[in-house]
Length: 383
Ligand SMILES: Cc1ncc(COP(=O)(O)O)c(C=O)c1O
Image (cartoon, rainbow, N blue to C red; front, top):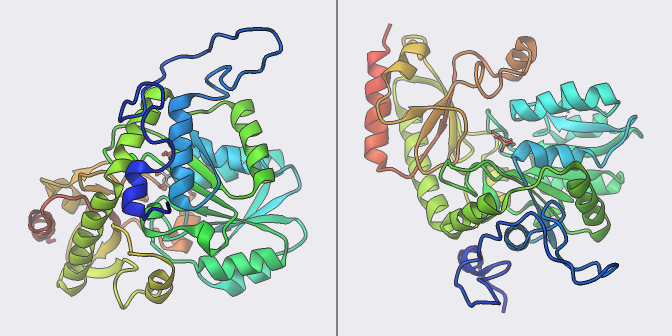
């Protein structure tokens, strides 16, 4: 029976425990497994290689993303590190020019010295990608909507271009989750996630994923997952399975709140610019509507010159200043000094990650309370 997403989040992957009938997948808190004989090669040998709780989560995320194979890691960056380890010295990646600062740091400070280089382009314009393609390019790596400026890249168009040129397309789907966007359906080869965000959903676990359809890529990724070893623990796998059960209801409320807040900010006298692909005026609006079932709940904005952004952060009472996003509670961050601090200042400025940029992860609290908190904090920040 083919299930819709709101059922898949609860029943996808491995549903419960076949041995005991437990409704929930048990936490198999074991590092190793008893082997009956030499040369037997049982299914479960050692928990870095495979663990039933992690395997249940891996098959669940594969089902949700419409892939065949899912792999769970100890963080989003561990997932991305393992995926980029598919490449070798001399290979080049084309990368969205506004991406999570940690991904930039990984590319710039870990892989570049090893000879795996990258070229940053504004991937929301396909001609930029076309111009950057050459023989050394092996993959195109995009975030859409991107962190922190929410720019939208047309996954279908990039996937066609990638296929025509024999390149892989890798999509970081953290900001929307498969509930709102399924890049594999648009032709992406590999989807990655920080599961720390909406998938876990409660700001209590660090995790990451890679999802693929192609068996050969999956085989190599499983090899790398085991060889590098940054796997998700059984306890954390359980927590993410539990988080995913409410993904649909959470995302519906996240988006409902974010649409109201973005609209309020946009119409308010306090704001110079709002970045949110759910606003009709946003340059990504049409592509976003085509490729996703909602614009997500991340909003970035710049206050107008009459307000001091540093004071704004100090005055918030309900919304918490913190790194991360995607939890049930609303969080605000300052990309220039927090999530994107590892990007050199001149690159940040060129891309538009200015010091005044405020990034808001809209939670599922009562939206009137959130708007009141924002308005009070802005008013008090008047210069
Ligand atoms: C879009 C995106 N991708 C990847 C990551 C890295 O994930 P993690 O913090 O779980 O390593 C983050 C973290 O903020 C992110 O925002």
